[in-house]
Image (cartoon, rainbow, N blue to C red; front, top):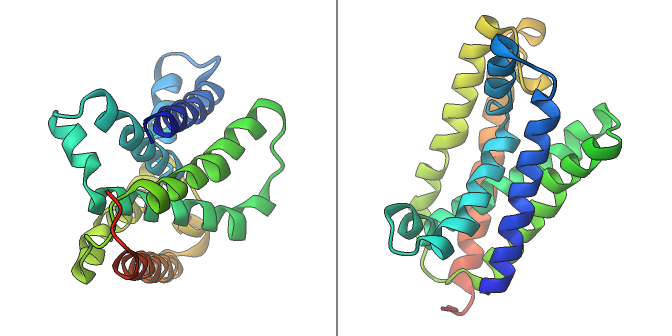
Length: 205
């Protein structure tokens, strides 16, 4: 388990750092700061960042508050949920909208395929089971809802929308709210599925 998580951590950090470098290379001053904020405004990046910390913190700092926090099964399940939605939305909606090549393809594949798969395998194989309650799904929704609200708020100020289904300037607020409602339902249903799986299998410490 430790070796697996160490390798998974390296993979997750690799994808994040490569994508960051690709976004900010050649930029300076205000443009560099703007690109950095834009980088951190993607749900993909934030969910992958959670995954990287989840793999790293409990191993490197097991007794620290952050290490203990990310060792909790409920938190690890939440990260698995976010990464699963990241991969699903990319494959179903976003993948066909562009054609990354070279290093961008490597970063894209790591962030949307490899790291989500590593997170899901970690949850299936190593996360203790029969620890979740049905009510846990509600706090898990707080992050994606906050993210959607932030994206709508920042979009017109920065003239930047991270995903086409959140672009108020093109779709209008009503359509974007409907899209967010649909996404919330995806999080809710998938979260309930994870809880159902957790409650149906034998605990593994």
